[in-house]
Length: 285
Image (cartoon, rainbow, N blue to C red):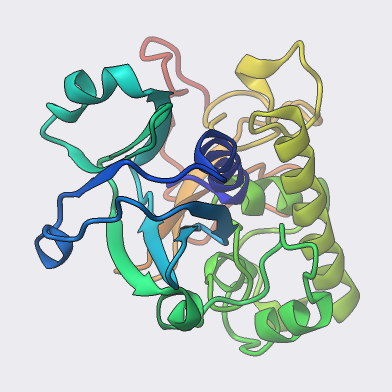
């Protein structure tokens, strides 16, 4: 699913497109709010909170959404509203006299009182992209369970908000940490550096306008050390990048890592040859 930087960029698009404008109409296509009418309410701001979006309008009301795996918000000239609204996957339309925001395939959508946003985002840990990010609280949260893998602890949004598999895999590689290392196997300084590295990379991606690890504009198609590079040689040591499951269902994920730079293969890696993504005819062992 989109990570903190992508959600931040989405919030920026919505804010720039609608903030300050009075809504001329709305169409919320979820049963609980199908009769809601936001027309006449001015958009105050659209802000991210971890991987959640909070579209605040006048009257103590917030349109809360989560993109999950396939969701998106796009802003278009209002003249395209009718054509765009015919898509069966559209879950929300919010429009002013100038622009329309289209929420497509949203994983979560509801209306909450702005004064009660804690009901939908109060469980989240410190947001890495929040100017008021509390590094010490995030550190304490991640270190709370010493038996959990560092990957699972970082991906748990209740500990720290905004990290997904990209912004977990890449900092772990940069610091030479095996993703399956128990939290208790790392000293506090290592965990603190991991979180600060993830924050730095997220901020860089927000500034660049796309998800980036190196910040170089000439490597957009391969701008990562390990994520998405299964079966391809490590850019540092040449050992093929591996992919293996981590965690327990239903929170199980897959994680990319370099056995050469990060202390060997994962305990869940069966060692079978892995095909690079998009390279069906090539195999690396």
